[in-house]
Image (cartoon, rainbow, N blue to C red):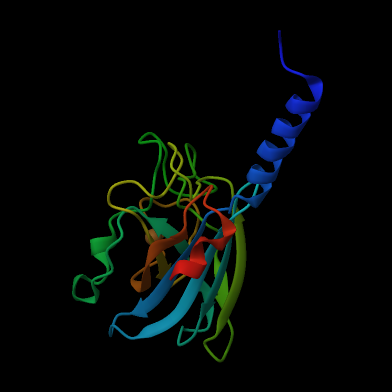
Amino acid sequence: MGFKPALVGILLAVVATQASAAGKAHAVAKMIGLDGRVTGTADFRATSHGVLIELEMRGLAPGPHAVMVHTTASCDPKSSFTSAGPDLSLDPKKLHGFLAQGGPRAGDLPNQFAGADGVLHASMFTSAFTLGNGKKSIFDRDGASLIVHARGDDYTTQPDGRAGARVACGTIIRTVAPGSRGRSRRSH
Ligand SMILES: [Cu+2]
């Protein structure tokens, strides 16, 4: 017997339509300062080659600031945000820093700069982690946080590139799971 070519064609068309309608993963983080007040937002969008991160902050000291994903979705100002754990590493052998031998870790991101008014607008792109469900995902059991440090990362010193205190923290919350239909947000 075998499939009729026309029927196979229709089935392929249905599969293709479903694939293109599937949503790419999306996540957000509300950034809070050491006083617990909201000081900005971060937006994480999965693309076909990596994760696009848009960060908007205010109230920062002018100049460079290290930005990193840390291992745990916990931003407790009373702990000075040490509750967020160390810089995220998906491979225990990796060291912190783009310029470190044996680096970087998956959570490492390039320094971003606040202007004289303390405002920071940043766009970053990384293929070191995903928002999906696989091994490279930041969404393991205890999630992840985005941390902004007081100073710039020297990209070499362990464990945090001499970036100083953690001045802002946001737990990263997935708002759209990978492969979900684009319309799913309407149910909220
Ligand atoms: Cu850090």
